[in-house]
Length: 418
Image 1 (cartoon, rainbow, N blue to C red):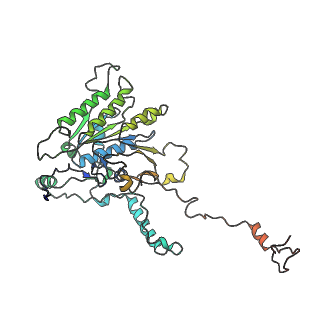
Image 2: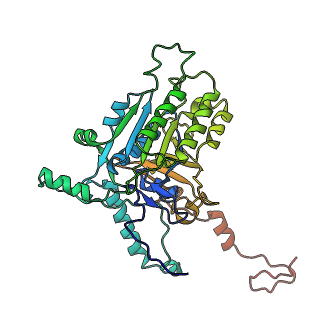
Image 3: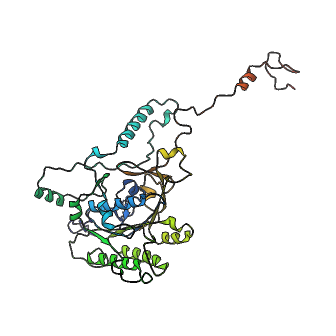
């Protein structure tokens, strides 16, 4: 058998802003949150559906959806947004944007770095637990790659040529205090899907928003050459379609039957399996607490399920000491498993560790982060953790021993004394 060298020009090129998984070779795209990418095993696989269960009192699920769409615009992907509770164009203009330099990092990051440096200095002076000094430290968070500052003194022609030649980023660092520029929105490929436009004259009983949304997504996939089932021309660079659906199954969405939502998820998953696209769907699961089987069926029809539980408005967590360090719990109910028996996070993840770690999230001024949950020391750091012995025990020890039959006479109790 002769050896034939592969030609790099004949190999299919990856879409911009994507990479291959080191675990199963699946094509991955970033969610925009480095810690969430780590939990997923490197990123969200193309052709999958991620379900985010919303919180009752906060909009953290909507924030994750904004991260997903903002990363798609930064990577040059085609993004589509569907929402009936809020205006899609308003959500689009309120997207966060890139941090242009390392100075835009949150001040809490510098404080954490100072604390870690102090701990490393103290670990060199270990005396009792000196054996643990050279062990690897336990990672509780995932750091984002530092973003270089964008040049501002370039002309329009040179800037356009440089942006075309530079590869698109996989995962960018975003600043929550910044908003996406209007010029970037005009150059980006974005579609706002409104399922109620065509059926605005129809009666409420005849409206099926899920079916209309599915038809719009199918038309978008076929028209823009995102389908992998349809043949493409040679040397054609594929792109990725990002679909974001906000508050699906809320009272604003109308359908003929309750089973129409199940049909929508089943058809959406089958459509994305044979296309270069991924979807992030947020659903108000707290509205269906009385019928938990409704949400449980939907979880079986998607590839990944995560839940955000905030401490805001909770009487159980308000008085707890850990609310000073975290803003809520982060649950991972299901992970995507494609071309493998186990999820990639069992081997590649730092935070989840195969689902055995407890996770929590914190919202800082400029970024959203998911970390391993740790309880603070009981009573605080400055208080004494062990109580001194009672005084009556000391008095008993100081009292003289009684002498009895068989005692040695030296004030010590004999084991044979009775």
